[in-house]
Image (cartoon, rainbow, N blue to C red; front, side):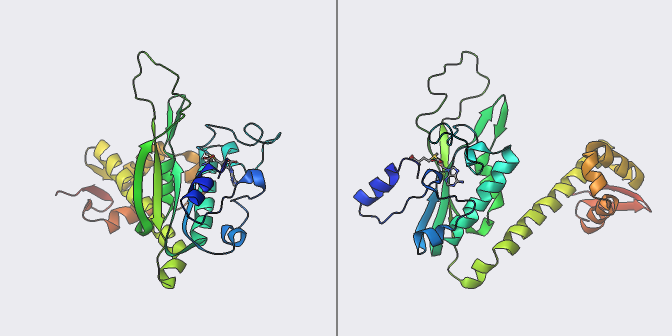
Length: 258
Ligand SMILES: C[S@@+](CC[C@H](N)C(=O)[O-])C[C@H]1O[C@@H](n2cnc3c(N)ncnc32)[C@H](O)[C@@H]1O
């Protein structure tokens, strides 16, 4: 809730609202929202820090950085994991048929663009996504900067992403299954794209040995070392996706025609 303005505005509008924040002792990564509030809500909306764009504990409030402050994450991966924990917590506090969501912006620094909104959408159940609203971001850090020869426009917008919690208990319980299934589909899709692009670079036709060699050259060696079955994965991708790959002779494959 930050300074609590939105809670006051909601109350002025006659909307029952409860605000929580780390600065008053509520930690969204460890404390249950539904237990803190005492009941499920029609809307559970978060406005987290946008990565380390503004540092809260030790700067905006308090004298020391808090280890679970979302503005003090180690890196983007750490931030994405913690944001997902917060969103699952929010979902748990939402009434069946109600909405949970977040207000979030992306962040570009030193030429690196981090799309926090894209990660949020990717990590939550696809079939619960209800709306993605884009609004002007006020009080941007970059408002008072003027760049003469900027290659890319400044980020002047932010997102309100809303998901709807299913009414049926059965669909609600399958959270892990649905998120795991969508991550698996994404990974399988990535393998198909990688093997296709490697085969295309090799002239649309390649032996398994050449494919292994090219995948090995492109991959992170540490990750390959951990996944000793990656050659079997390449063969599985070829065998299970005949709309994309065709066997030519034993151990040789080519890209399938349309
Ligand atoms: C973008 S601000 C919210 C601003 C608010 N909407 C307002 O209008 O004032 C982000 C807030 O997230 C809080 N926060 C950071 N990590 C948190 C955590 N682990 N649990 C709860 N709140 C956290 C910060 O203290 C900060 O007040």
